Length: 205
Image 1 (spheres, one colour):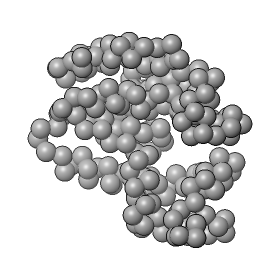
Image 2 (cartoon, helix red, strand yellow):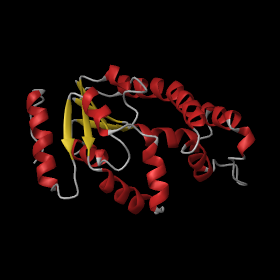
Image 3 (tube, rainbow, N blue to C red):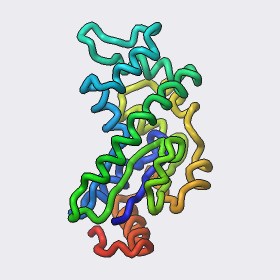
Image 4 (cartoon, rainbow, N blue to C red):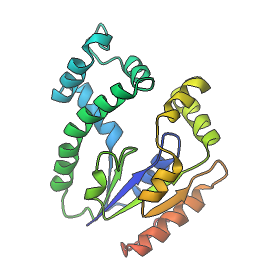
């Protein structure tokens, strides 16, 4: 079994790479962001700790759910709040991911961990190799605005507190450029080259 870590800043296009890998029948993709969101939706201990940590900021909606927009606005403008949320998230997410890996059956030969904070959370310790996905700042901003339906200024604020492309490429084993003009076929070819290096076998068509 091989574990591949996929990382990069918001808007870099890392989810596309995960989806390409996920086309393999013997592959399981673990999306760290989605898992964290599910944990808050289920009102777990993780959810309770977030509420307690930010109780002075009124981040709970009338229906009892997390006000994600308000929490996002807080952490994107306050580094201390961001670090506090990350510490809580890492504490609960790492054991959850480790458990999921251990519970996979023998038909799974490749595990993909899709995580923007792969290195910060030390999730790379689970990985046999890591891939950084990068693109230009302008493309990131455009993708974030289109994906999240937010103004350009908000997208820029989000990226301002994230790591640069250099951080990811310096720490990862491989780098994939996913620019605005990069075709899906080119991305598949890049992924297949990495799979060949890892001797994983069957290519993704």
